[in-house]
Length: 117
Length: 114
Image 1: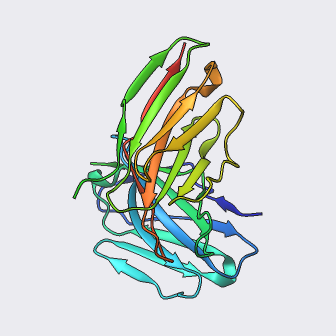
Image 2 (image 1 turned 135 degrees about the horizontal axis):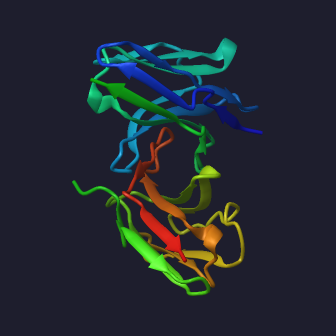
């Protein structure tokens, strides 16, 4: 069965600190996709990144970076030099990649990040 | 372009009443998903529509829940005889029909059952 675990329920940091959000997944499929979404206090889920199971290259986008390691079934998210605007709940999610089938997302419980000034 | 829209943004109802929640997906997106976000259960898949295919209803929690999608666009989620445990945020997402599609979410409808 598919499962996503975000072991960190809440994290609190001071502005400009680096912070890493952990995500561990389980799936029996060889083709799958991993996602990170941000949910700010306004409530709308904002897509951040998608990775497929065949691409283990790390990715950097501004202050955000993602480390995908199939050997440990992890897809961790690092925010460098955090800012108050990064305060949100961050969700990691998994979908299986069979074209044309339901690609429902299996979600972790989220990590609530508070960045304090 | 316009994103996914949902209405109403908030709905308060009495136990036992029926409610309808609406979702307008991104124009041209053929796939549409409903999820529920509640404090105790996190985010849960409810139902999936893809084009004119039969929907995947495997996530609906009971037969009080139903959904339809008219003309391959707008979708309505109906909850009959609401119960207090139905209180949650109902989220709609849409995606294009590409292999590496990504789901884009609407702002959600917060349902409170008194």
